[in-house]
Amino acid sequence: MKARKIEVHDLMQAGYRYIRTEPEGSNFHPGFTPDLSPRQMLELGVFGGRYLTDCVQEYPASWFDKARLCHEAHRPELNLFLVNASRPLSYWRAKGWIWEEDPRGWFQWYCRYYSGRRCPDDERQIRRWKAMRRHVAQLQAHCAPGELHCRSRQRQALLHWAYDSRNL
Image (cartoon, rainbow, N blue to C red; front, side, top):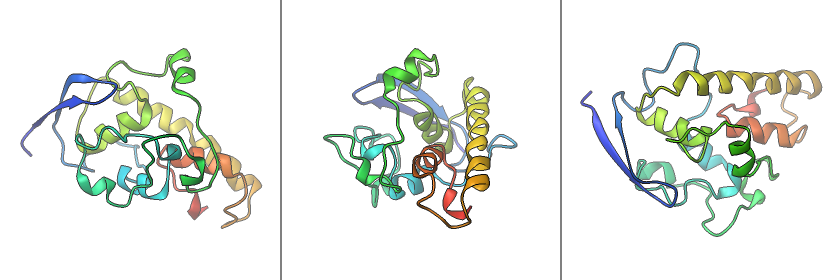
C-alpha cells in the first residue's frame, strides 16, 4: 500500500497532518480485535450522534451513509441502547486520557487507526480498549444471553469502544 498523507481541518484541529501506512481495517496490532468498524458503530448509534459531525472530510463518505448523527446536540435517543453512556470531554481531559493529536479521544484514535494511521499512542490506546473487557464479564455475569435491555448504559459504553454486546 502506498502511504497516504492526510491533513485535518475541523473544529478541533487545523493543519494537523498524519500518514496512513496500512490498508483500511487491516494489519492491526496482535490482540487488538474490535468487534465493530467505525462505520458500523456510527450506523448503530454512538455518542448521541454528536461525534465526528465536523470531520466527514477526513474519513470515507461510506462511513456516514447510514450514520445516526446530530450536528446540533448530543441526543441519547440516537444511541443504539437509547441511553447516555458518555462523559464530557472535560472529564477525559482531567483524567489525562486525551492525547494531543487525537483531541476527541479514543474513538477518534480508533477511526484514524482503522483508516491506516499508526502512531506512538497505539499501545496505550489498545491497553485502554482491552481494559473495557471487564464490562463484558459483568454483562455475562448479570444478564441472560440476548437480554439487551439489561445494563443498557454498560452496553452503550462497550459500543463506544467497538465491543458488540448484542452477541452476549
